[in-house]
Length: 508
Image (cartoon, rainbow, N blue to C red; front, side):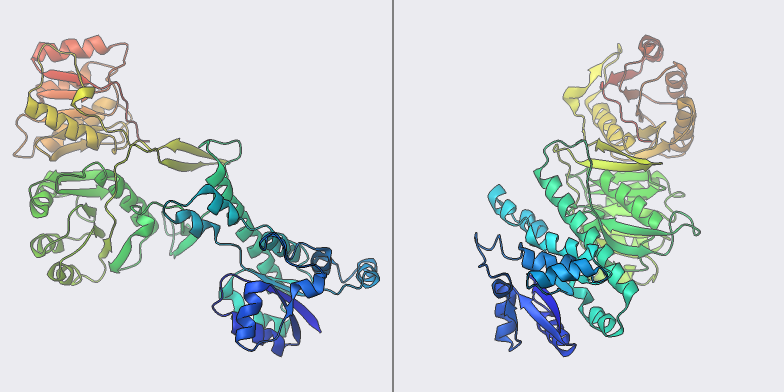
């Protein structure tokens, strides 16, 4: 008779799985809670302490950590010496190990959980037994996921060696992820010598950035509530790789505007229009007017519930994604008329001073940095020109600054009264971005008196010269160039205001 060790905290499906093992001539060895559940269902099992000859102790911390268990798991059936050693010590092989790990991740998500409570949910015996079974997968079945119970029973009957080895790999992935979560919780240094992290597949994607590239979407176990991972899709096709990147960028931008009704439109991870208003409909109107051409096929994020009037206006365009905290019933019915538009509800992104960290893959490695969540205010501005900005211009400058940090470098934003008018992104020289932004902005009827923001300093005076000649009345930039004085002198020559922040906002 084969023997199976069962010790699970996740009880759904347990009784049926245990009965299926008995039907295939397994004897069951169980620990406390598992044995109680099976006994209550009339399924016979043997207490692990009857196998080890040693009682569970230390409040259950020690129960399977015993040679009678681990020798039975680790003994190689193809080595006579191993099998003789079992016989000499009156031990028997264990042919299947089914264990759920203590719910450490769920525990640390609870509000106000103490360190002691978290530590108590670090499983020791479970990973040890599972890893032993996985190491000896030529002979032993290692089962860590209740979702696999039915497949395991079928594979057992067929003695499917390939599946048994696949289960072993799953065990090592699971225990590695488990240890990574514990290490992350216990580590205070955000940049430790070993950067261990884990992700769980949320979605297989049809393809990646291009149709010939395979891809998948993974979620971090501690993903913030306001991240795209926790959005809920109400309508439309599944998200694509590019959709996910663009939508994430839109949420990062939306976090800048917690107070005013705001609409963000994104194309290729750059804002193509951001508008604010007294209502979400007015904010939409201003975001649309910011660049009515580029918004076609865009990703839209709104920080207020969508009403029918706003939905009707969005419905007239081809949009890839619409994200908002909620939708009126009529608004949702309007948006659902287009079968392909992806409609998502989101938790409003929170702008926080607490550092968040982002990773970027490079060939053979990974870059990790704090997210750029700095938000400048009036007290961070230094007037460097003879002309000082007005209060209205300061408001416009700070708005433009909040946008430019989300535009690919070299980045220039022209804005006025809570509306972007022109955006220059990703050019290899700064004057190129200035020209693009102003050519677009000058087509907007609201342009007169607009201001300009730059993500980095002006290495030459040409940008200030061009901006002043084309109607810009105030500029915000970080400063710090060895030629700052040239840019300031040029601004003074035209009588425009310039302020510096001392903070650069590159986004590559």
